[in-house]
Every structure is written in C-alpha cells, then in structure tokens.
Image (tube, rainbow, N blue to C red; front, side):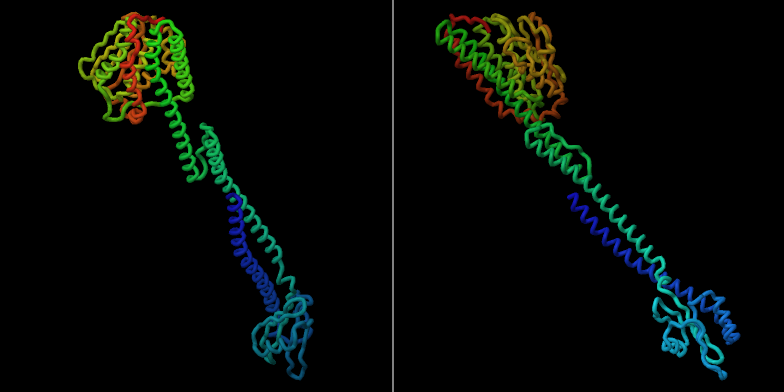
Length: 477
C-alpha cells in the first residue's frame, strides 16, 4: 500500500508539473522575444525624426551612429531628385523583404543569418525609407535557459516533496495496518494479551478498537469457560463428601481400604481439575431480570440432604427462618451450589459431632443467610476469602467461599466471615433484593443449564450405603 501510494502520487505530481511548467516556459520564451523586438522598435524610432528633416548621407550616418546600434542598424533610402538609392549600414535582410515592406507600408520581421531583422518603413516625400534593425538570436533567447532551469528545479522539488509526503502518509496508514495484522497473528497464536494501539486514520482506528474489543471478549469467554469448568468440578465435591463419609463407615477390610483410597484419589483429581481450570480471574453474575428463587425452599431442600449426613456423624443441626417464602434475585442452582460449598466445608474441616446451623433473615432490601458451626474456626478469614486460596486446611482449593462471594457480589451484597454463637465459624451471605445487582445478572441464568447436573446430588443421598451400617463409625472427616 505504501509504495502504491508513492507511485500514484509521483505520477500525478509529474503530470501536474509538466502541464504547468511547459506552457509557462513557452510563455517566458515568447516574452523574451517580444522584449527584444520592442527594443529594436525603439532604436528604429530614434532615426525616424532625422529622416523627416534631412536625407543627407553624412547627417544620417551621424544619426545612425548616435543611435548606438553599432553594426546592428541599416538605413535604406529610395532614389529621388536625380540621386540614386542610398543604403547606410550593413544590410542583412534580403532585397525582396525590403521591397515588400515598402510596398505594404507596415513593419515586418525577416529571418537573417544569426538572428532576425526588424524592417520599419518611414514615409518620406520622395518615397518610403526602410530602417533595418538587427536582432541577434542571443537577445531573443536571453534568460530563457535560466527560466527553464528554474522551472525544472521547482518541478523536481514539487515531485520530491509530494513523494516524501506520500511516503509519510503511507507509513501512517501502513504502520497501524501492520500492527493490526501482527496483533491478529499473535492472538491466533494464543497470546491472549495481544492488543493494538488505537491510532492512525479513523478507519484503522475503528478497526483497532473492534479488534481490542474482540480480544477482550475472547479472553472473557475463555475465563467464563474456565470458571464454569471450575464450578462444575467443585460441585463434584458434594457427592465426594458423601462417598468419603460412607467409605469411612465401611469398617476395616481390604475392600473398604481400597474404596477409601479410590475416593481419596478421586478427590485429589477433582482438586487438580479445579486448580487447572481457574488459571484466569473469572467474572460471574446473578440471575437475569425477573429470575430468582425461594431461598427458604432451597435451604430446606439442601438441609434435607445434609441432615442425613449429619445424623450419621452425630451432628446437631438447626435451621431457622425457612418457614415462609423468601424471594431473592439469584438462580436456584447458584444458591444451592453456594450452600453445598459452605456445608461441605463444615463436614470437611470440622470433626464429627460438631453442630452447625443455617439461618435465613429476610430484611426490607436484603436477605441474610448465616451458616455457622461449632468447629475450631478459621484463623485467617481474609486468606480464606482470597480467590484460589483456602483456609489453610489440607486439600482445600478455596473455591467454596469464592463461589459464595461471587453470588453475593453479583446482587450488590457481600460475604463476611466471623465467629458464630456456636463457638466456631460464621459465614454471613448478604444478598441484595432491591435490584442493585440485577443489572449484572444476565450471565447467571445462562449458566443454569450447565449446572443442571447438580440436582443429581440428591440421588446420592437416597443411595447412601452408610445408612445400612448403623454400627460403623468414621475415623475422621
């Protein structure tokens, strides 16, 4: 593009220079010629008054000499009063040209060796005299060569200047296009941080803006995919908790040990999947406008599942605030996933016989869900809330609290960790219900179909083998 623009500009500028310089040079040449013949006419006019007074040879020779024409003027007088025709000076014009001027009675020019001759007729009483003024070729072309040289220099300067301007303009156009191509190539090679400067011509600037926006969308889509994979993998931890607790109740036998080893291996693999999937910082949202669920119903459903496990571990369970509907702008699957994450942490990080409780408080513009336990508590709540970090316990990915935090923040609320009245940890989920977070809610509902597999955890509760071994005890969480 750059060299094509330079060639086009070179051709156009050259044509323009030729179109103006050639006629201008011809005009200058004609002006110089006219100036030379005008000087010759003035020299001839000096002799005319003398011819009207006298025709004496001596006096006319002095007049011709006084005109300062040196060898460049000649005077041709007709014959009369018994004297022959008189020619003064050096004649260069042909006799036929002189005779033609006498006959026509008007000035004329004739080509002579080395230049031109101006023939000026002067009417006398005896006839018509002719004044011949020689105009050398050097005078008719004086300064024309210099003028042509100046015009050529100016034309060349214009061509060079236009080429330089076209080259700079081409660079200004090509450089953003090249950067755009390099950015697209880098993005295609998997360099998701590739962006291009938004400068240059308006068209390329808009293309750069569109490219950067597309790259941001690609990064966002990949982050959402990783987040979805992490969330779905994390939900496997709920049935894994059930399997681990049931496997612990199988007693001491080779088959039981193999089952417990397989469950532990499966749990480690799930943790590896979660950590691998969460390489980028994801963004989530709550349910879309008009979507939501009954928090009380969801809490009752999930507590029915976890209460069965709590019974096997002699855990006291308390549920409050679920006796009437409590609407929240959160998808049902999202709230269920958050509750499963928190309750799974209780079973995972607290010893058996540790009591826990779930309370739902319905305020005017918010709903507060409290999950508390009587365990040892969390030593560093800030580290527990940090994305991708756990509370410090072995095997923790830190995703449980992160899922809860994202759910609350999507509605404009937050999550706090503190000490519970039971003596352990209390996780408070503040969910806004006045529409503060609904503007960000479009993506949450879109993830619900992918989370449909979560409903299968209820089936695990119905198939728990641990209930068939009432005498078995577990060695630990």
